[in-house]
Length: 365
Image 1 (tube, rainbow, N blue to C red):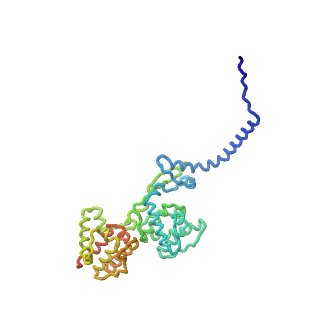
Image 2: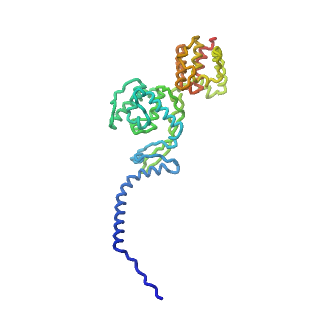
Image 3: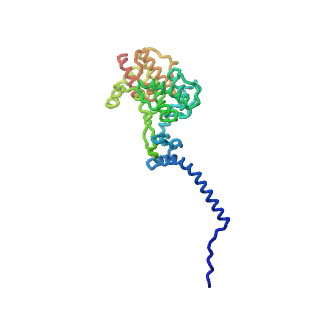
């Protein structure tokens, strides 16, 4: 039985035309995509660098953040830091403060980067805080006009802050470039300088991703950026007093000081059938401070001047502030502590206030 002859495979004409057409189309497509791929290389390179094994978190990165010139660098906040409760609280407190200051201007800030970058809100904020008018155009749409306004506003800010030792961690380009870190540094400095009636969260730090271009390649590093320290340090109160030493070096003597102050205040408050056992909590609403000042100066404080049963934070701050005014009327210097510190149960601040009273009125019966 003979085997059937093998036939050589042949291509049919219409199949050859179809494949040629396909290859031609593929070649054209590849040619068209080549340039697009080159344009996107830097962006992909940046994403790969940021998603390297040493940086497991995914950074939300924009194309313009990776299309860098040689030796240029960009910074962005690590997403994990953005989710930090203290970081979120810092942003919320600052936004609420700005909106409170500018309530008469009918300005509502919702997002710091988008609402402050052009200088308009910063201008209004500084004018309100410093009670002065800046010589700038009210509305500017062009980038040049916005940067000119920012330059004027920031120069005025620097004139206020530099004499008090503030380190300037922002500039026109970073603010206009919507750099949130720079904007936060600026707002924290303004809030502290103008003694804003707010309590900023202490020791807020964020991880910042720094992308640099070196010899055509993108390099990334992670650095920690400190946004707030302690309230006292940010307020510029670098002079130390006996209570700083007491807290830092002699905590064992703290109970002795507290006991002496409790004895002093109860000596007077007992006249109203009131008694203190916890200094940091029982003076936090300001009621006992106001009543104590009336007893020490021998006068009745009208009840309509303060909140006898304060419920909100603002009402408590009002009471402590009113007590501070009574102290100044009595010849004492303005307390070093802020009313907000006392309301927020800051023991060192409360002790400072009470010790000043003790020093002056310890012999009052």
